[in-house]
Image 1: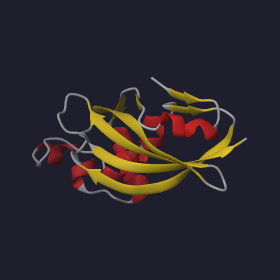
Image 2 (image 1 turned 120 degrees about the vertical axis):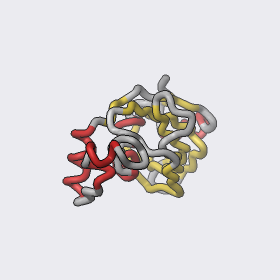
Image 3 (image 1 turned 135 degrees about the horizontal axis):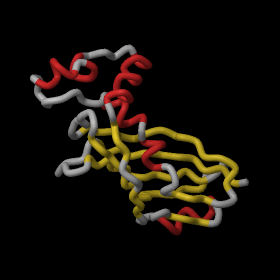
Length: 151
């Protein structure tokens, strides 16, 4: 389900609303590419044989990879008309609660927690929870902020 408003000025009306995205697979190839991009080749991420005998029973995605997937996982969950652009304003907090094993599917649920008009647009806070399919605990919880500029 998508949260939709006609313009950034309407964002305060959707505070408290929640939307959930589609499942996406985090496969070993994506983990390896992230390891290459960040020079983080720790064995728990890139060595399936050694990781099978490790604490998680398989390779796991980097926590920062899971975090980096937030734009893709939340894409389309908030549709703001009459907006010229939206920029990532930052994060107030991030907690990595459970590792994402290679091959797992994840999705994001976002809840709009605030919408504050500023001189440049509307600053929107949201709580984003990344779930792991079949798991009791989420992979991560983040307090994200975005700035929506009017057209």
